Length: 143
Image (cartoon, rainbow, N blue to C red; front, side, top):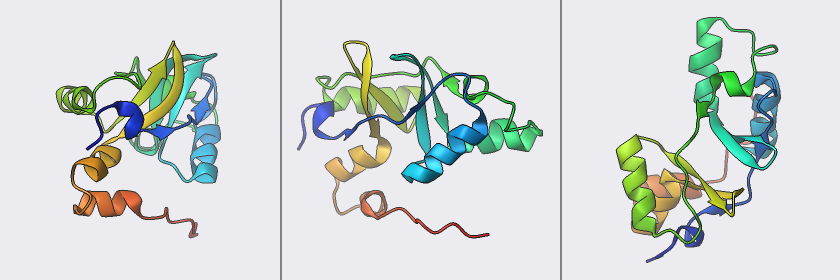
């Protein structure tokens, strides 16, 4: 079993500027086959933006995704962990804050993401959530 966040996290960070439009963020998510991006002002993490945030906090409210910024819709000041934090700390933070992903920050710089799926795969590799997390993303875009 992994002991530290660095052992289970997804390395690398896909980020957008706070002033990026929701369309820009969504296009980046689509291109990278991911459902979330870090909102960063330079190297400082200022928020997390998910595809659900875009749909529920903006589009469902009638906001124009071409003009609304990532910072307006993202979850500000996200709970973060460090690569050397114990995995148990990440689990505790996710439970306490009811979040499914945590940016991993080292020396102030985002270096990865640890997700509920990453932790599920580590804790119980045979679980349904672990199977789903390991599956290749659906790369087809219908429409």
